[in-house]
Image (cartoon, rainbow, N blue to C red; front, side, top):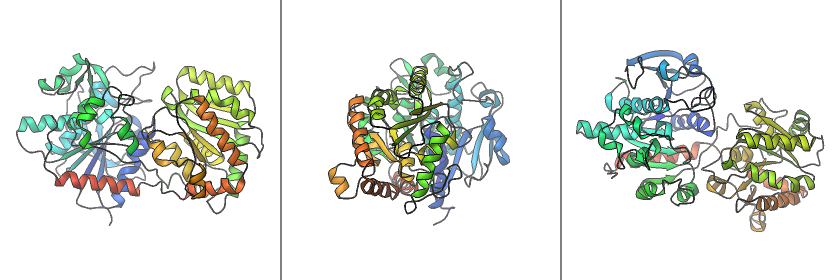
Length: 500
């Protein structure tokens, strides 16, 4: 079934690959609506009108002038198309809030913009108005799908609108938590500017432990809550991974489920990737060897095909566990391994990795920053891709690794546990192994997994078996898109739930 189906879905989010990206959220927000379009849903996307998007949008039409609002003197809703993108896109053209280049959340000093609460409240408010206020006379969604804290006030505004109007809501809401650690925390004094009823300023609303927390509000009022893997959905119900919000999540546990992300297999396709040295597939792995050779040269590593190469593409934050890899680095280098890392983030971790590269020239290469094409070459040219995260809601990097036959080496948590089958004896015997997993966030456990990987790397038939099984995994968005569609239909068929 092709696009144009009757189920109308609006995704509200703060990022979109490739023009506005700070992490995997941008990739998901770009790919999921397209996958839903391909299975027959009538999906659209709502984004803030950042300069990169405002300049790129084609055939833009003014739908409505919906401001001033939230302190912005002019707020205009535009509808158009982004280049090469099949989904209609709405942009919130509010220059006072969004005409800022660079990181969408941080100012030039690296600190959060002081008006972020108002900026992203506007995103949720416009999403709710599109559904309940009829901003677009030609289209309104049945499902509002909000992504992460930036859009988490969407279900809050829906609830406030319904309570004010005293009528049954016309749309239902889904909130996807991409990373519970980011909650949209703001001083409680800012509540007055959010245009919400007074009762929502307390514990029954968006207040939590003396702050406003946008994500908490979304968790309270969304009709359904999803997160990006089944294991992470279970983990966040516990104090260890609940980021203080586990009581709220436990309260809403019946509405919570996990759906593993996919990846855009058109963008991430080793057989047709213009960024890599030589295309290849599971039947022609000689191209992968050529990619490794080219990557070693590009990174200034010893051009040695007998050196197993581990790459990392990651934000450098404590969550991502790159300090654990630093602790295991000596063991890996002693085995003859190499490391190439691309990332940016914590200044201490950046400096520590720079120091490791300086201490081990030709063995360790580090590039601070982010370069999308280089990320493709790192994943195509490596033998292993390291994802040692302390916690990981889903992770996309290991999915890219599977797609490229670059075996993921992961901490067995969250989506990493759901997507990588450890190469233990039974998995190897049954041809199920797709990578290497370790338990416990320690350098010692990571070093043990590296040692096991090194041993198998020196057994080419076994290694190639794992590569082919990894590349055979369905990492596309087709199955996740269908699961979301099932959730939407179940939601629309069910009586409206009470959340308090």
